[in-house]
Image (cartoon, rainbow, N blue to C red; front, side):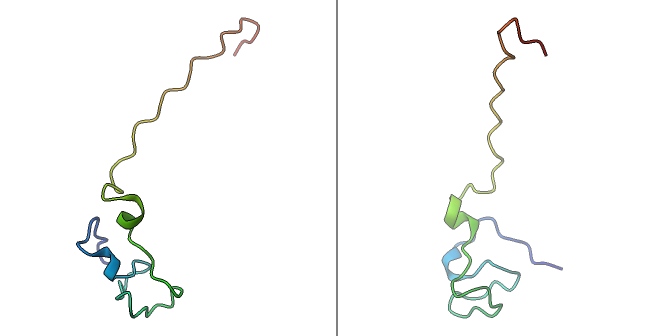
Length: 69
């Protein structure tokens, strides 16, 4: 069973988030490249897991009377 992914860990820079091992940044055991994988909160901020904003409604249909749906 996979470990629960923390949404806002206290020090995300200390771990690699590329797999379920959560290796220390100085000991990348999984071979996930030469650099650690950053936590989403480091890339997109602390509210990275908040629901996205509601989409903007599309403009009404064409106002050209020659165009019919």
